[in-house]
Picture 1 (cartoon, rainbow over the protein chains, first blue to last red):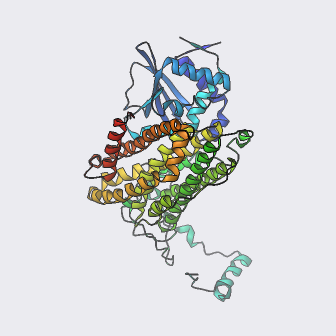
Picture 2 (cartoon, each protein chain N blue to C red; picture 1 turned 90 degrees about the vertical axis):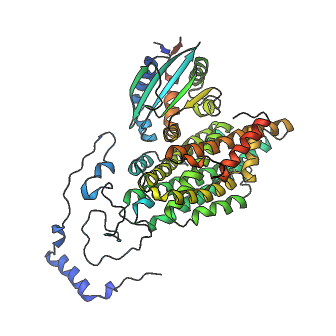
Picture 3 (cartoon, rainbow over the protein chains, first blue to last red; picture 1 turned 45 degrees about the horizontal axis):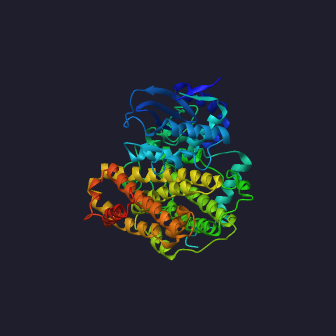
Length: 146
Length: 382
């Protein structure tokens, strides 16, 4: 059954995939970060807060707005960028060289990374492989786009 | 050999006889059973995480209680153990907490241990089979990898040099520094392996890079080393790894840079938290930190602007050697250099040193402003 993007169902589905791949994510190591994902579409945005602890995604919530003081960082982008990334992951089993998070966000042209504290920003890079492989779990989902 | 044991134990009849007597009769001394130490029973606060150093932060065993000046222990007696007469002075150079402590040191160590990876087996080296790159790209990639191998060799030695100099009571810091030495050795390994798998061999070492980074090895204090290495140099290198991941021509290179950036960001985190700890608890050291930054910014700029790395990035970013490639490469590399400097000052500001963002205070900040203005004049946005 397809999950809709963006939605908490999508992230909950990724969470379930992460649990199923626990041994692999344990091998990657502790991931202790809370970050936001923001998806914009025609002037409106959906915001989600993902709280990771130890080896798993502990909590997903949709919020009306992102408070950068309450998250380590936020990844923000237009729905078409997120859709292209997710579809790329589905086609290839993982993001290809043009669609991983760091590439899309590096100069802020497609995805933007926002943060209040550079120390929080750096958590994106401290846990980069786990975060990338978390999104790569989209390859195991059927995703429909609103 | 600088140190000789005070006894020739194999010739010491009393010592040998006592040992043999114990082993033959079972009659024991047992005075150690009355060690006057605190009795605790730590438990993991989070069973999924396991038993961490933070769980051991209890009473006399904990890092919270370690005073600014450690006078009681100059031996390898583990913190909290009874220290009988006769332990030698290990002559640690650093026994002040302000020289090396960072908020959350113990967490950085736990994260380091859990996030270790293997350069031999965790990189999909087999996916390089059949990968071909134009000569300029291949050589530029190999030069970048040669440069980074050089950088990481220096970065391996630098923390490792300080390990025996730190008072053993700072066991969590020593553990983190040891983990960093392992991280850097792995970085040197993976970059060397990637350079050689380009087919172009290693390229040229960089005298500018080495002359600059020698400051890291020759720092006068651990704190100066940490400011220069963890906060400044590794802050710049973290941006460099992120840029390198962005430029990576293959998914193998992207994996390499995603993994190394994890370790690098952790080292930067320790550096930031040490800097913050000193500023918050020892405000009288502010000007000392400024002095550390003056030299650290000088050498880090030299390393980052070295010909071997700058030209490699221009070629990789531009995708070749034609005039239009070089123009594009310069534009993208300029944006990267400005980002490096911007993020450096952003870290300092958030750590509590906003006054560093002043061209009169920091030559590097003056360079940043000039670079930004030049870039804008040439239509390069940042």
